[in-house]
Length: 189
Image 1 (cartoon, rainbow, N blue to C red):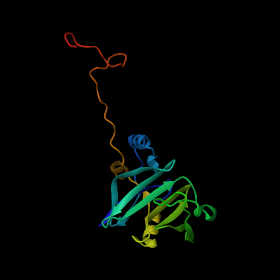
Image 2: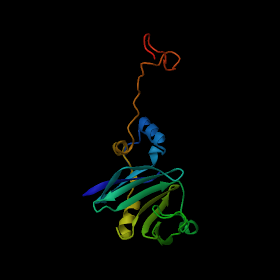
Image 3: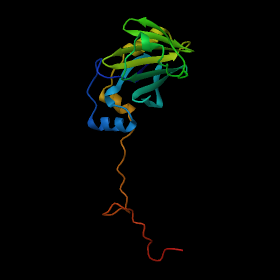
């Protein structure tokens, strides 16, 4: 069974309708730009509940699980990658101080560190990365996850975003917006 996998990148691929103003606001409240959310189709994987959001300082990440229990991470950051920076960039799920072994592959990089592998591809000022356990998937599967990412449609974005906050009316707030803390007559102790 194929599942939608959501990632984030900006300015490339082909997508559907743009995010609405409300979706942009909700994404900002969640800590990421709505324009950065992308999706891809991956057989056997689906989005893990509550596993999407900010990655690093300003990136976005979505974690997906397979029907076997493996995890796949899609991350996007506004940056590039080259031979000089490839080994220094940690793969999600590894220790931050570890280095990666990098091999140029087409327009991107195959990367391995510890028990995790990744395919990273930069375009239009962003870096989209797909990573998983080396024993869980093939390098070609990881590459496909990264290269097939496309902008999320408004409906797909809606499924990812937290619910819009409700405007709660309080009966004890009056003209100056301060709560009414008075004690009713006859009450007290």
